[in-house]
Image (cartoon, rainbow, N blue to C red; front, side):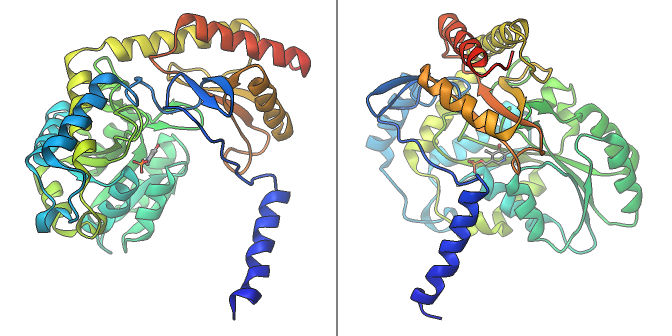
Length: 395
Ligand SMILES: *Cc1c(COP(=O)(O)O)cnc(C)c1O
């Protein structure tokens, strides 16, 4: 088939996306990432980035990246095992391992790559993966690449997990895998229960802490720290693309043998380029910043509490919790889209989410707080929500 013939097929698919209302349009920023951003000629209060700790445009991060650019260059033009490993790559892997209390860590180009590579590298057809039904797309894809048996358990449901553990009792290795925080609701995996079941059934536990590393838990070490099970989680995967700088890069922190095996076998590690020096150096700075003080994560949590409290008081329905992801439940998909549009008119940039990203009838606006938001900016956002709610007769 020529492209002219294929064109109609692609165009139909695009039309179908448009009529389903799921066609994604990208807003173009003319500024750096921050609590205020410029879109066209407008300045907007930004409440939809993963810039939880304000590190995406932090002076110390930029300085670290600039020095590395001068001292270690722009890129490595190599994968790690040929000539793409610098001192700072190993330094960063050591810093991650020390921060999380793991034997060692291994860098990937992204957390998507980390999750894409890990399962195939360590598991085979005699093994079983027990996976939360709402796990991130990168886990779903990574699991697809293995010959291991896949058993999905109901979201956050320990009884359902126990059932799948019984169903896989003849498997050699059983690996339970879960997001630490689920990004649509800001809810936490029940890690204490998961680790208890893992112990009971002789299973390993892997947590993807992308929406937690650097700020969840009393010292920002993530959901295992928050659930007081840091020594019981065997594998942590996470990203430098969210709280820890927001540029790119992912990692796996785990027992030595697992990290060693990934270095030998993980395909996105072996066959994709080394993380660039400026990103590595700034990531090291991010780990240093969150290691030496809890100030940023404390401010973030205070901000989340302030916003959650004010929105509840105003009468909005928000899922209970304490995570800086705050879903404002509206139910109807068209209403959520309209609400987000009108908020933009009020100078507040947020995202509406509806089916199929969230269940039917559970459309919402997802707000994400940053440590960089001032109390006045948070109050301004709440006022904007109230103004739009009155216009749309929601409250
Ligand atoms: C964002 C995210 C990823 C992907 O991280 P990248 O480094 O951007 O590829 C993976 N898992 C979870 C749970 C995420 O939220």
